[in-house]
Amino acid sequence: MKVLKVLNNSLVLALDESGAECILMGKGLGYHKAIGYPVKKEEIQKIFVLTDNKMLENFIQLASTIDETYLNMVREIIDFAAKKYQIKVKDYLYLSLADHISFVVKRFKEGNIGENFNYPDVLLHHRNEYQIGLFAVNLINKKMHVLLPNSEATGIGLHFVDAEVDVGDQQKNRKIAELVSSLEK
Image 1 (spheres, helix red, strand yellow):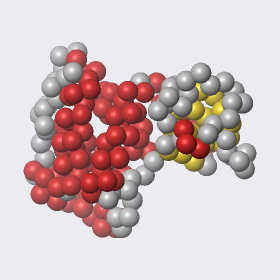
Image 2 (image 1 turned 45 degrees about the horizontal axis):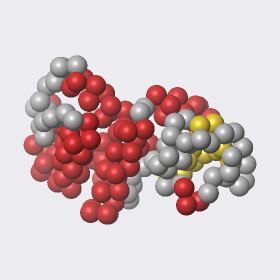
Image 3 (image 1 turned 180 degrees about the vertical axis):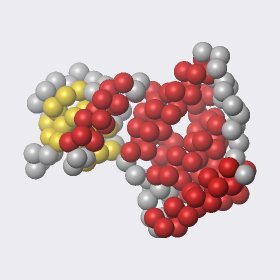
Image 4 (image 1 turned 120 degrees about the vertical axis):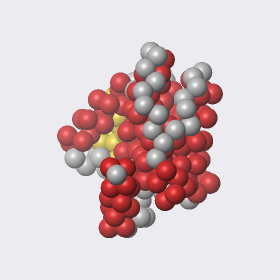
């Protein structure tokens, strides 16, 4: 694989062996890399293959605006979910969760703590995802030197509910509909 564009120290736009564009993720992967630079397989921790050009553009735009600290935290959170709960997620979670976390931390540091969301149904129906959320909140607090409330774990847990692979779409849609319905009551 060869570098097309460095997005940040952890992400590069590259060409794979077949000539298709992809996003490569890895700690320090983009550091001191230039266009055409070959990327070693052992440097790559995640490959994002996007076939839709508009989605690729959006991915690149969002990825280039997110600090790599958040992307690295998300990778750690997703690795925790995979190891502890055998949860597999769709690739978009890397960016959507990094964007969510960066927004929450920014808002918190500006003194705008926001509402204290704590959905009992997440605790009841999605215990593993809530535990992942608690792990994430502790990690964020430690790495970003903030004190987010544990209620933020439900929001992060919902990101995992939405992005899980291997959950039947009908079953997942039914659970999400039940959860949203219970929140409206």
